[in-house]
Image (tube, rainbow, N blue to C red; front, side):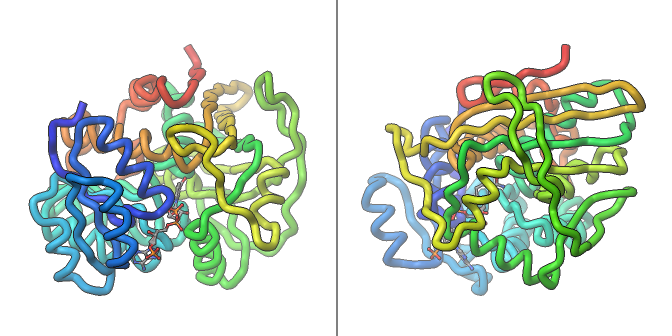
Length: 344
Ligand SMILES: NC(=O)c1ccc[n+]([C@@H]2O[C@H](COP(=O)([O-])OP(=O)(O)OC[C@H]3O[C@@H](n4cnc5c(N)ncnc54)[C@H](OP(=O)(O)O)[C@@H]3O)[C@@H](O)[C@H]2O)c1
């Protein structure tokens, strides 16, 4: 459980930020509500009496310093991260506190590793990008599936989502990412990220029961192509998306998620099926649960708890979830939120 430590949530009144705030409270932390819009922040804070709200903008370093003052860590849930990642990491380094974000923007994730690895080590603090459903969960599953293998030929991560009603932030981040790569597509092959313009194939993926075989879009490249190869020696990392979810995401005027339970979760369900191949041998790790946005909160707050209590493999630098934590132990700790099947 948390220890009454204060944790800044940048983007607190966003869809994902709200789940972060609720999870932090549930785990005994004291969230500090931070966002750029004073009116939205005030309205959100009124619904959370007792929690402090501090207005701050990514383009105003002094406001970020005020926002982070006295906090034990910061979670950045405000995307597009192209705009917020660098400034909030800079503020975390100045404050000397750990930084986590939920960025699923491949270019922003790459920037974090490229620009802050040395600086985070020098500052003696941890910077953890993509600590969420995309980028974080798949990396933990791939790491757990690897087990004692030090290399593998291929990691495949298939996302079996029942639907995908995206938030404004998701759509904006997708647009920024696409613009940054000139509208081209990405794949991770032969040990590096490559741009291409090929049409994406539709394939059949055999998810475990009860989901079973489903059409998926191949090379639907997600943040796992940054996090997994950041620490695992695997030349091929491929991600697949259920065709139904890809169609939802691409639909003009795609509807936002609708809460259906007391936690504010939508009815969306997910299965993340990770298969690691080494020559003829395959190892598999699977996670399933409800609502990809909501589940990002227990993922991030579990990570935060481990960082603040020293249960990490590294004490400083930029690292993905799989590199930082004991992956099987971390995944088992999520039992209240995610059903996990790991190789024995
Ligand atoms: N990796 C994953 O699996 C995962 C999971 C969940 C979310 N995400 C990512 O997290 C981000 C937020 O998602 P969401 O669902 O919370 O979207 P959302 O409900 O639209 O909220 C976005 C939040 O970001 C803030 N924001 C946007 N640009 C900002 C800027 N330049 N400076 C300060 N604040 C800014 C917004 O504030 P205003 O209202 O003032 O604009 C709002 O609070 C997206 O990039 C999404 O892709 C990733």
